[in-house]
Amino acid sequence: FISLVPDDTYYTSGLLTHLEQSNDADIDAATAWNETTGSRNVLVAVLDTGVDIDHPDLAGNIWVNPGEVANNGIDDDNNGYIDDVNGWDFIDNDNNVSPIPDSAVFDETVVLHGTHVAGTIGATGNNVEGVTGINWEVTILPIKVFDDDGNSTIAVIVEAMEYATSLGADVFNMSFGGYSNSQTEAAGIAEVVANGGLVVAAAGNDSLNIDDYPSYPVCYEDVLGVSAVDGDDGMAWFTNYGAGCVDVAAPGQSILSTYYTDDPANGFTSAYGYLSGTSMATPVVSGIAALMLAVDDTLTNGDLLALIVSSTDTIGLPELGSGRVNAAQAVAEVKNFGGPNEVSITGFRSSRKNKTILSTERGNAKRPYFQWHKPNSLASLAGYYVYFGQAKKNPLTHGTFQTKRSYRPATNLKGNERVFRLRIKAVDVDGNASDLSQFVYIVDRKVQRPIWHKAGGLRWYAPKGEYVVGYKVYRATSRTGKYQSISGVITQQQYRDTTAVPGTTYFYKLRAIDDLGNVSTLTGGRMISV
Image (cartoon, rainbow, N blue to C red; front, side):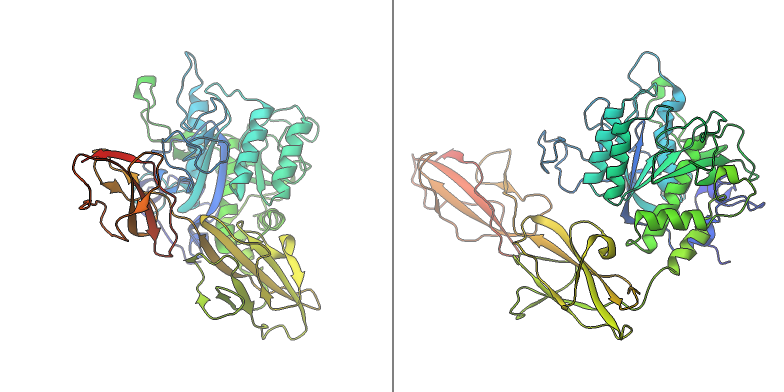
């Protein structure tokens, strides 16, 4: 096989044995990397003890909320969580997702746990830094659901799952478990699955047959259960087992990954280290699932589970699942999973078709119009499954069947840089489906207001993240009076009022105008005495 090799220190030293080692008791990561090294478009939720988001090997792959302004004390995206810029801490109900030990007595392994898990999934690869994750690039969503002693509640875990689902998480890594069956937790898992998420859970570390002594969430329906093998593909001494709950095995003994290292006062100074457990095996499987989605993001959670289970290496331990996972074989099966040629989509600003739009282009059309041609490879065409929305849904499972070759949203699109996806698969009379066709339309019908300069005067800052091309200045002689435009459109971020009468107090407001012609609401008034 051709192998793509990263330059990360511990990989080149041969210490990341779960990825590659001479006895081949590994996941063949290098061969998989020849097809893909991951994608930032894949979102993996890590429900754990918190993640060191400043770690040099993780920082570049941590989720950043595009709808939230950091540290302004406002719930900008109206999701119920103020300043959830990188995730949420459901233990302390704040936005600090780092695993900071805040009790007099804490469990060191628990504190390190979430950061270690995150590194296995997605430590940045090929950056001459420490370790490499199974995904060199991916988006990790840190969600803190355990305190520094490993305590949590079902209510916390269920709310965290709901949060990650609302953000469109593709994979849910759950390196935890217990022996109590909760209908509430089971319903939460079912809701994740119903919304397309793949739940990957640890079998546990008590050397028990969990077919006889069930552990949860691994034994719930539709959960991909993970046991652990050692460096020789033998059963790890600690792993739980049971073919009824466990689907696959993964390396989980002496796994080298990232450590929480922001707290030298409490002894957390090492940036990397080893941990063992089914908790370490689980992110290996989550990482492989993310690689598969980087190849084909239309795979359903059922597709992922089935392909991961069918692509394992046989190790002769059926109580640990179908075998030990193999990233190269899983990715290869995805490559062979597609159908015939996809359709070609053309976008227009309206049904009059007088102006085309390009995929991934920003626009302010209220109801864009899309059309496509019949694919040549499907002579006995039945029709098309069409999905339109903000998620990355498979149109076969979440779309609507139609025979016409056009689509227009039923209602006006709204929002500020909201990403909508038109996703289509053609099907023939025998049920064969084409590859995915996608058209991405970024709706930008709003622009944020300018921000007054702190130094005073008629100066201001551009709103962050906007495509502003100009401003208009308005003036009134009282705070509640009628504001009239005095400037026309200007490009500078300051203005000199040459018509102001000395000795008069004026009140000024501003609007921003972007490149699509969107005009912001007025700012608050600024009082200036001439």
